[in-house]
Length: 324
Image 1 (tube, rainbow, N blue to C red):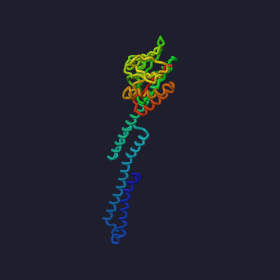
Image 2: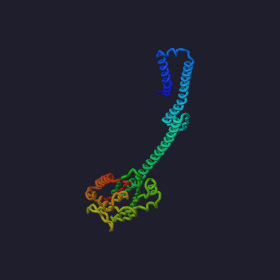
Image 3: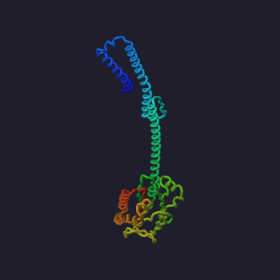
Image 4: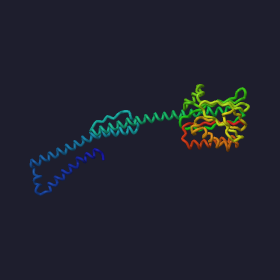
């Protein structure tokens, strides 16, 4: 029901009641001659009644227009908000209830503008973070896998296994080359700071590579030399003897032996080095003699199972080397 129809009925019903009262007066035998006779009191009552009725009608029309206009303004403002127009604040004049409603709509408009602003900022931030994450993945590939692909020495088999989290990456940088004597010289560095910035620092600032690094030299006669700084102890596995080779004494690598280098992300999954070594032994003891590809496939399966079982907040990189 519209406001105008409501106010019209508000006036109409009293008039109908007044008409019914006059009809009732005419129906009473004793009062009918008095009502019909032009008595001054009756005429005065009729005039007052008519005047009151006309006043009520004009008053209803006036109230209708006074209330309908701000309500229409409120409706237009609500439709504008629905269409995304939050520019002009609503200025409403009228009864206090209508003014309060207009102020509530203005408050809602301000809250919507703030919410939309936060959503836009959040979308920009997510896009920026996603772009940085994609750049970090590409840079990590350049710093690890591409170095392995470019290494030409046919004496070694090399492969990297990785698990990257959805959170900030911690990059590793591999430097791999042969010196003048034909020895393989390997440098494996891990970024101190996470994300794209940490990877960029590894590439652009040589001093960053000295903070967390492992350097390995495999001589042509099989002698292995390892120096490390804040990096986990690598695993050296003798395929012929079926056991890990201790690095507490000079080591000579033979054909089919394995060297596994890994970053701190894997070591953080275990309480100590003994548990980590036991995790490697479980695979190497059964599959090291079955070939390099099968052994690495089983390590990848174990790594996938490990990352599903635990909450991993640090990406994991393994570098596997086998002397042919």
